[in-house]
Length: 541
Image 1 (spheres, rainbow, N blue to C red):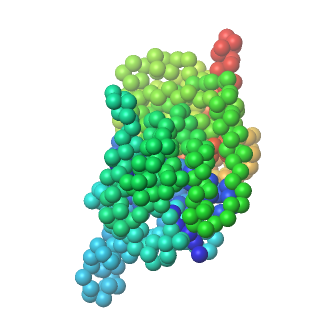
Image 2: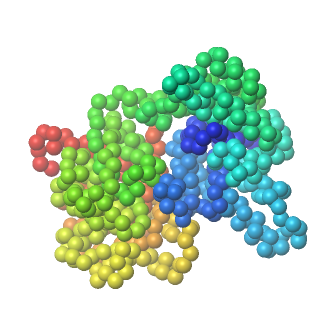
Image 3: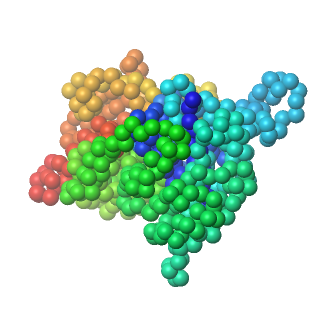
């Protein structure tokens, strides 16, 4: 029978439930178990797809085209699990499903209530992941215990534990042990209150993971154990880690969390080796090579807006035995001050995806700077659109070139709306989403990077390169190096007369892992290191 682990949080949000769930998944995989992970989000949006980066952070896209919470990115980076649309459920999606069934008469005229209908729907979502080839399902409950929004989910997992047998379920509670610097004291009361609310809801936590700034003494552990009714050995200390989140699994191993979980779920240990992970961390910590990459975005002030990109850059650094420092630049600042002030001295320039007109001209200026100064450039989604606009204006002499997203009446629409998008009037889940195949042209940077002709990458966009401009671009030196299999849509463009200039319609950052860096990020960082070495030696590129 599939075992289940439920991860809840208390005291404050943003303690790292997603990273801990991912770390637990990785540790269990190291013991030979097949795992699946899912996230329950208590907001009423059906999915995060219509939420802005300042509201939600990054929208992570799965292989099957679901727009999901960024924690699913952590799940995939830390484990071998491939997430899908069943791995992220919101209050909105739960209620939407129940209301749809009610409208279809599937409840036979009964009164629809939170209990049992909403809680049953939540339990059905949990069961979807309990397949024959899954040993353990890890379900993360968003928000914190005590929030009104989280109550149906907490009740559902309580019921679920009773239904499948307590021996098959483990409840892990992540909490905060604050340190009062002025008093030089660690305080356990917030954790006591948090666990108390969980117990009032009918759930006795099996394990407490305690986020803390300072080490927890034996005396503090005994106090927590006494007042929270948790075995002392099941109180896991998790001190803050800097600068790498990839150290979290090692902290948990040192505390013996993997062994505790296996014991409580009556499972055998089948290994527990983390050699590849340890090697990756050793490279991160020991390398003496450092390069600086400029990321020019629209949501720079929100750290999590580009979460997968920051991590993919780190992974690319690992593959080149280099530490990547990111210079985060708001594109609007380039519009005000010019590109050179903000970009001078960087080894590479990356422009991420995004939507809307704000900051576009700053991105275009940054790309011009990269092109003219022969600085390695990687453009993702909107970063490809801006590269096309810049090249059309400044090389092809189409000075009014633009995207119809930003100027519906532009006389030179080098980027335009996908044909299948023209009649869509609903937001959310309506873009070109998920994994799509791409064919790479021989003797191109893209083909060399991937080492194969056919690739598959994840998409999230409405606009595309206008095929009308393929020939003029090629004549002036920007080639189409990747297309859809039928050659209808341009997927990759790159410059011939440039050390490394690649822009892609898709989001390669979603498929990069610390122990398996994405080839585009690896090659981008390699080219950036070479560019930095040339600059430091006074050579021209």
